[in-house]
Structure formats: C-alpha cells, structure tokens
Amino acid sequence: MIEPIALAIIGGSGLYDFPGLLDKRENALDTPFGKPSAPVITGILEGKRVAFLARHGLGHQLSPSEVNYRANIFALKLLGVRNIVSVNACGSLREDIAPGDLVIPDQLFDNTRSRERTFFGDGIVAHVSVAEPFCMRLGNQLINTIKKTSSKKVHIGGTFITIEGPRFSTKAESNVFRSWGMSIIGMTASPEAFLAREAEICYTAMAHVTDYDVWHTSESPVTVEMVIKVLMENTSMAQKVIQQLITVINPDPECTCTSALDNTLITNKDYIPAETHKKLDILIGKYLQKP
Image (cartoon, rainbow, N blue to C red; front, side, top):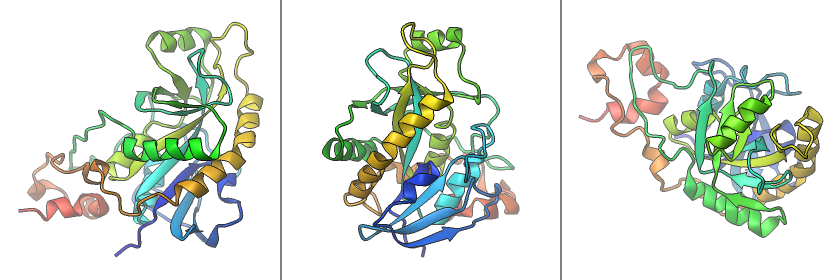
C-alpha cells in the first residue's frame, strides 16, 4: 500500500527550497511514458508528506511543448499523490485582473496543438468527463488559504486558455481570446489538468498574473523579464500559502475526482492488450476487477 502524499506542487524549482521541509528526498523515477521533467522532491511538511516537481526541468530546460506532461502526472500517481496545486505564470486578458494578482480559475480552454493529451490508447478507450476541469473542493481550500496568508488580490474563477507557445501571442490572437471571454492565458495548464483527472488526482491552479499579454494599449507587451520578476516576487508568498494549505489538506480526500474513471472505460476488458493493461494498472486495475 502506497503511503499517500497529501499535496504535490508543480511549478518552479525554487518552491521546495525553504525551511520546514523535513526528510527531503530526491526521487528519480521512470514511467511507461518516459521520465518526468525532473526528479520529484518529497518530504514532510507540517507532519504530512508533500512532493515538488519542477515542470520545466532543473534550470528551466524544457519549453512548454517539450514538457512530458504524461510522465509528470504518472510519476506523481506512482508516488501516491492525492492533491496537486499547479503554480502557473499567466497573462491577463481582462482589465480588472492586474499584474501581481492571483487567479484560481474554474474553467480551461485547450488551444494547444501538439501535445499528448491522454494516458489511454493502445487498445483501450476511456471517455472522461472534464466539464469542471479543476477540483473546486481543493480550489476553495486554496482560496481560503491565500486570503489568510497573503495580501495579494485573488480572483475566484475565470477561464484559463492554454496556448502552445513557446512564443507569446500576436495582438490579433490576444484580442480574439478576449472576444471569446477568456480571463487569463498561459502555456502549461493543458493537458496537465486533464491528465490529473484521468489519474484521479484532485487538481487546481494558482495562476500568478505577470502581465497584460499584448492586447493592452497603455501597457508594454509581455516579456520574459516581466514574467521572471513577478514569479520571483511571489515565490516567498507561494511558500507561505503551501505551508498553510498543507495543514488543512486531507491526505485521502472524499471527492468525485478520486473516482473520475468510474464508468468511463468503453473497451471490453477481454479485448484490452495485456501490455496496455499492465502499463495502466495503477489507473484502471480497480475497475477491471469489477464483474
């Protein structure tokens, strides 16, 4: 039986480098989908097990399109992770969401083109519901924690559009996204959120607004310097939020996310290739045992 990890953080490598993290270990894992972006750091925080994964690799070596999202989420599943908070840099597509603010989105629009979006295939088909792509139980816990620990303005809800990157948007694209009703824009939330749902892990995002993208006529277009500046300023705040959030996290949550695959497997189990069954057993094993 895997001892559950109450909370995993996917974000920059500096997030786990703070006092209070005990029994820190580096876990170099392999998965059926390849290696994750970096070794997963695990430890004990406030008496509960936590994990940290640098999404873009150590030293930020991977572009958003090069990140092996499947390996990252599968590695966290192997470690027994129950809840994930994704830390994202994003641009604002709304006047009222200003650089420096935080957004806890409740909807997601996938505008990427070249990413592996599912664990399924190779002889097995699953149709998983992602009508509500973020876990709002976990999101509400995050919102309450931010309000208690930070003076940052936090926006509750909003649609997060994920673009392929690594380039930033043109003004035409940015204005189209605004006309669609998008709230914030980034490059990494998809397919990460969808894979977490397939892995039956509760997932929410803490989006740090770094800029107004390129649509705002009175503000400078987004630059890497802007993004890094805001993220560096927010690292300490994010660490405080994580340290407080872990105190209220349930290591074994009662949540619909934890049974997301129930009644989603459409392939007759007698036709699932043995190799695929073995590869995905940690995800589907409990469902294939049903009569």
